[in-house]
Image (cartoon, rainbow, N blue to C red; front, side, top):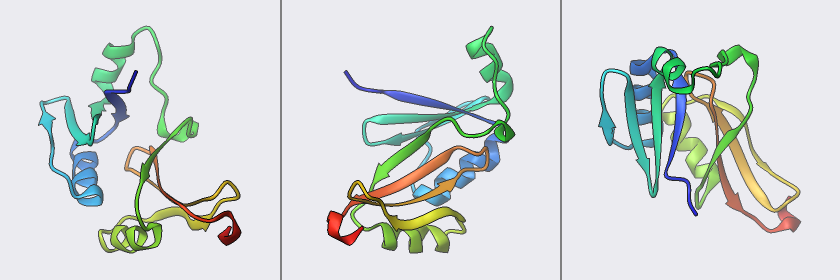
Length: 129
C-alpha cells in the first residue's frame, strides 16, 4: 500500500503555486482553474482552492489556517543544513531548526503560504543529538 496523492487546501492558489515552484524547485505537474499539482517522486501534492475543497469534502468542514496544525509532511534530504541555506536563499523562512532530535534525525521546518508545515530531515548519529 502507498499514498499516491495528498490534497492541501489553499486560500491563494497562485501564491501557493509560486511558493512550491520556488521552494522545491520543481515544475507544476498538472493544473486547472482550481488546483496545481506537484510530483514528489511517487506522491502527488495537490494544492486545491478552498471553494473546491468545500465541495470535495462536503459535509466535512475546511479548517482555517489559524485553527492550528494537524500534520506535517516530511522530505528526506542528504544535508539539512545545506537545504536550509538553499531554502533561505529562495526566500523561505524557517519555522524551526536545524536541530538534532533525540530519535537520531536532524530536522528543520517551514510553512507554505496556507500554513501547511513541511519538515526536511536527515538521519544522524544519536551521539550527535
